[in-house]
Amino acid sequence: MLAKRIIPCLDVRNGKVVKGVNFEGIKDVGDPVELAIEYNRQGADELVFYDITASYEGRGVMLDVVKRTAQQVFVPLCVGGGIGSVQDFRDTLRAGADKVSVNSQAVKNPKLISDAAEIFGSQCVVVGIDAKRNGKGGYNVFINGGRVDMNLDLGDWVKEIEERGAGEICLNSIDTDGVRGGFDLDMLNFVCSRVKIPVIASGGCGSIDHFSEVFEKTASSAALAASLFHFGELTVDEVKEHLRQHKIPVRTSARA
Amino acid sequence: MIAIIDYGAGNLFSVKNALDFLGLENKITNSAADLRSADRLILPGVGAFPDAMRMLGETGLIGVIKEEVQKKPLLGICLGMQMLFEKGYEFGETDGLGLIPGSVKLMHPAGELPVPHIGWNSLEKNVPCRLLDRCADGEYVYFVHSYAAECDRKYIAAWCDYGMKVPALVFSGNVYGAQFHPEKSGETGLNILRCFAEL
Figure 1 (tube, rainbow over the protein chains, first blue to last red):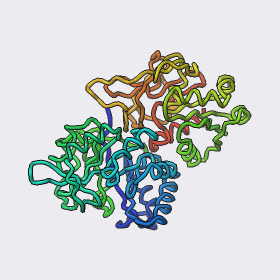
Figure 2 (cartoon, helix red, strand yellow):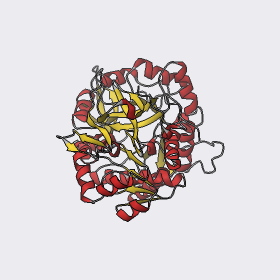
Figure 3 (cartoon, rainbow over the protein chains, first blue to last red):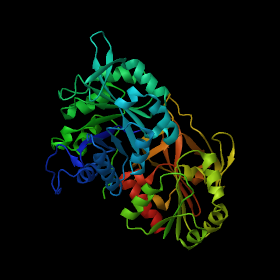
Figure 4 (tube, each protein chain N blue to C red):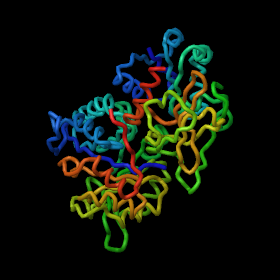
C-alpha cells in the first residue's frame, strides 16, 4: 500500500532560503542544501524547491542548489518556479531533479504539459495550480502567484492536465493559503473526484491535526507545507508519528 | 570498482551520486574492458523496454554482461531490472537478457489504482536475500513503473502490494534486480546498495 507523503517546500531566492529558523546542527539556515539534508533526516518523503528568483542568473544558482542536494539527499526532489519550456525541464532534470513543477506557463501554454510528459515521462511532470472560489459554486484558476484570474474552471483544467499526461497535481487554495486554518478540503475533494492522478494538498496547514484531517477527509496522496516546518513548529517526524496514530500509512524511514 | 553500464538510457547520475555518497568506487562506462575489470555491475534504466534493449544491443555489451555475471554480481534497477528477464511485452514482444526466467507485462492493479505505480511502498520479504540483510520487513522504497515482472516466486526476494503483488526485488545466482529505485529510497535504498557492495 502506498504511503501518504509529507513534503516540505523550500522557497529559494538567489540560492538562499527565503525564510527559515535555526535547526540544531545547521550552520547556515539560509542554505537550501543544509535545510534539505535536515528535512531528509527528519523523514521527508520528497522535497520541493520553489524558485522565486526572477533573473536568468538566479536560475543557474538554483540548478547548482539542486545538483548539490542530489549528491547528498536520496529521496525524490521536485523543482518549481519559473519553468516555461521543455528546455527548462531538461536543465532541471539534468541538474538532478526527479520532478519538475509547472504552473502559470502551463495555463498559458498547455502543450508544455504534453510535450514534457512525452519526452521525459509523466512521472516527472507536476502541474501546480492556484485556485480560488468564484462565488458561483465553483473554482477559478489563477496565475502569476495567484494574482491573475484566468477565468478558467478548475474542473475543466484538472481534466485537461490529466489528459495531457501530467503525473501529479499540486493544488494550492488561495482561499486558505496563509490562513493556517487547515487545507481546503472542499477544493481537494472537488479535484480528487475528477482525476485519478495523485493530488498534493497545499496551502492552509497550521497545525498537526490538519495533516490527519486532510488524509482522513480527502483522497489526497501527499501534503505539502512550508512555514510550519521552516519555523520549526513541527518536524516531519512529529507529523508522521501523529499520522501513524491515526492509522494513516506513512513511510517509516531507516536511520543512518 | 562498480561499473554503471551506460547505454544511453536513464539517469545514471543519481545512481552515481548514491555510490559516491557511500564512498564506493564506481565508473559510468560503456567499455567492455571496464565491465571485465569491475567487481560488480549495475544496469540502470528509464524509458521503454524495446528502446532500451536496442540501445544496449548497439553497445555490443550484451555478450560481455552474460559472461561477467557468471563471475560477479549484477544489479538491474527499474527498467534495468525488467531487462534481466526473458521477454518484455511493452509495445509488442521483445527479448530481454534472459538472466532470470520470466517476463515483464503491463500492470493491472485492482481497485482502479492508477498506472504508473508511483510512490513509496513497503517491502514484504519472501525468499531470504543478502541485499535485504540491513532491511527490516515493511521498510519503504520508492517506485516509478507501469510494467511488472511475472516469474516463479523462488526468484522473488520481496514483493510490494499495489492492488496486486508486485515483484519488488528479484534474484537468481549473481543476478539481482530492483523494480524500485534504491538511489531514491532514502536510507533503506542506501542500505541495499551497501549490501550489494558487500556481496
